[in-house]
Structures are given as C-alpha cells and as structure tokens.
Image: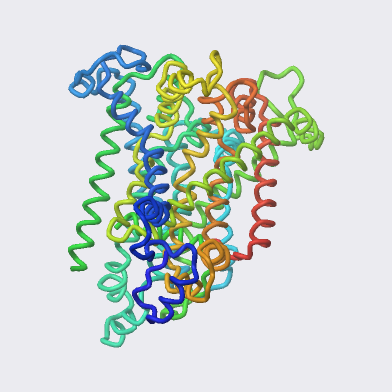
Length: 295
Length: 306
C-alpha cells in the first residue's frame, strides 16, 4: 500500500522506521523467509483477487469444455472429446429455435429500450423540469424490485386485460426492465461530459439540433453503445421475468432451464460458448479502439 | 469501452449526484417530450402491473367456476394466510440472500480493491474478467456448478479422499450449495460498484494515513473503508435484492427443504394456479425489500441512488 514515491524523504524514513507493516522496506539484514513474507504481504490482495477470478471462471470453463463432450442427450458426464456438436449446432433443433427467439427478442428489446432510455437520460442530464424526483423514482424502482415480482406483476396485468402471453409480451417485459439500465448508463456518460463543449458549439452559431447531432451525440455515443450492449446481454440471459410472461414461446435460457431435469444437449453449450466468445471479442475490440483513439 | 461504461453506470448508482450544472437553452416542453415515451412505458408496464398485482392479491376463487378464475372480494386475509403458511420460505430467502451478500462483500472487496488500486495496466483486462460470466448463460453456469459439486465431480471426490467430507454426504442439493450459487451468480453486481467507488479514491490519502503513523489496518479502517461506503451500499443492495427474489439457484442446486420465496411464487402461479396467494407473496416481498432499502439508505447516507 505504501508507494512512497511522492512523499518527502523524511516522512518516508519515519514511516519505514516506525511502521511494522512497512512491507518491502526492510534492510538487507532481513533473511530470505522474511523477504518472502514481505512479498506475500505486499501481493496478498492481488493473490486473493486472482483466486476470486479463477472462481468466477470455473463454471465458464466447464461450460466451454462440455461443448466438446461426446455425449448423447444428457451432457452430464465427460465421455470423450468430439467436435460434432460444433459442426452440427442445430443437431438439437429445439436449441436453434430457442436461440432464434432469444436473438429476435434481444434485438427488438435493445433497440426500443436504448431509444427510450437515451431520451430519458438526455432529459435528466440536460434539462431542468418539474417532476424530476418522481422520474428518478420510477427509473430506480424497477431495478430495486426482484425479478419474481416484476414477472408476476406483468403477468397479473396480462391476465387482467386478457392478453395471451407469448413473443410480444416477452418483448414488452424486456424493454421495461432494460430502460432503467440504459438511463443509468447513458446518464453517467452525459454527466462526465464537459457542458462547455456544447456551449462552445452554440456560441459558434450551431443551432440546438446541430449541436446535438454534431457534438452531443458523438460524445455520448460510447455510453449509448455500452447501454445497448448491456440491454442485449440482460435480455438474452433473462430467465425469471421471461418465464412468467412467455406462454408457449421458448427462449434460450428457458429451454436450458426446462431441459435441465432430463439433460441438456451439448449444442446448448456450443451456443453459450459462441455467445461468450462473440461478447468477449466485441468488448476487447472496443477496448482497443478507445485506446487507439486516445493515443 | 463498454467495461468502463458499465462501471460508470454503476458509479452513478454508487454516488450522489446533483442537478445538472448547465442547462441548455430551448423550449420548456423539450424535457417532457424526451421523457414521455420512456416514462409512459414504465408506467404502463411497471406501475400499472404493480397495481394489478395488488388487486389480484385480494381476490378469491369464484365458487363453481373453472380453475384460474378469480373475482375481487378484497379478502385481506389472503395476506395473513400466505404469510403464516410461507413464513419459513420468507425467512430462508432473506437468510440465504444475506449470507450470499456478506460472502460477496468478503471476496468481492479484495478483488475490487486490487483492480482499482493495484492492477495498473491490467485494470481493464481484470474488469472484463469480472463481467465475463455475464457473457455465458446464467442458467448454464448454475448447472455447471451442479456438475462441479456433484457426487462424482472433482470437488466432492477430492474432499472425500482427504476425509474432509464424511463419506456419503454430498455438496449438491443443500442449503450450502444454494448460498454458494447465489454468491457466485451475484458477485459481479458487488464488485462493479465497489470498484467504481475505490477507483475514485485518491491513493495519496492512504499514503497520508501511513505518514501519520497509521498502520495499514488502521489506515484501511479509517480511510479506505469509509471512502468506499457508497460502493458498499450500492453493491450490497445490487446483490441482496436479486438474490432474495431468485429461485433458479434454489431450484437447481437445492432440495425441497431449501425452497426460497421465489420458488413458492413460481409454483403457486404455474402449478397450482393459485394467483392470489402468489400475488400476495410477491407484494410482501416487494414491500419488504423497499422498506429494507429505504432504511438501509437512510442509515448509510446515500440518498440518491439513480
């Protein structure tokens, strides 16, 4: 913790002399075990952190490995390496139809939630208006409500008005819970922007629309893209709310959950692995792009 | 880009935030036009459904009608009936969620601390690693845990060989497995806001504490921890709320005696078609969590979360 680079020398000396935990600042007299202990103490946090990351990755590794399992209907025990699940991803037809449903719902919900949420974020970050705290509350509450309640509440509404749950009720539900996350993400981006840039554009005779299109929107774009990606991830992986409002329509998570009892085909692992790699590529590309832009 | 933005998103949840400093010139109706579609959607498909849920929770069966037909009779006893019958599941939900939250904080704090203050150029890569689990299916990951912890799996057989686990006992289908699953699944929700608040912390403050003769533990307790409290508050809420309503972990990793309130709501709705009880239970869960959140935020002092 003590990176004493910036501290005045006297303070550094005092600190090392008095502090028991002044790790790494011991004299040569300290032996090898003492140095090992000091190293351990200095890097303990990092070691723990890396162990926690390993813990996070164990089930992911399992999921990826079992996409190569030479298993039949039930993909529970390792039976040998094969690539046949990868060459024949629609070998279990239900997997593919569920995947197509999830992709369609995810795209529709993402587009709608990103547009609605971005508009709200702009209103909150760039305008003064009455009813601000009510607006904040209405955005916060869906995030502070357990998914079971959101799902059950929507289903009660659909039962009340006699709307048969299906594809469109899932889309409605997904837009609802994604909007709040879009607002929070885009608003954070807008809050970090210097408002003087927009003022400068206006001073240079850009009208409101031009300022928005040529200055504000490009600056907010990373936040909007991030919000869209987050929405898609939330929608694609949602199970609880979907399960309440899906009727007979099967999404990918619902398919996996329902077939858990009688065995999940390895093709489901292929789909999950593909999504994992694709998302990782998107994020890493974004990282590289923003690094290059900064450089 | 998206990692930092996601962290920034949670940062907004972590810290208080004032009104915008600079207000754009323009028509007074502009903000309302911007708000209208999004807010209308949330009113129609969040606020109105909550009222529908409340209404459903007071209904009773129509005598002689087919299953699933209910009529409004304002039967408040639905609540007391539901609560007396399912008190154990309620208590268990909060207990499991509370344990998972504490465990997430215990292992998430060092991770967030390392990323924010120790990782240097590896920071973004470690952040991506934290959100990477979201890129694979939540349910498949939970099922993967079932395989890892299964009787024939690596963990149980190792523990059996080392005689750390009595022969014949298993790790799956237990309360421990459910809490472990909840901890695993909601850990990123803890780490991201913690990271966001630790990242804003000026490391020179920690150095200053050291220069003023504070030992590392004292410096942590008196400087780092208080400054990261907004992250702790946001992280515990973001972990506890979804964990208390979750039923996937209890269904996949537990047994019938580890059922949580979500499992009851699910089975009341779909297996027994007892809508009023399910609605009453959901409503109580929502109210309990809102009370808890309000109380907690008051105590911890982060007034505005959005």
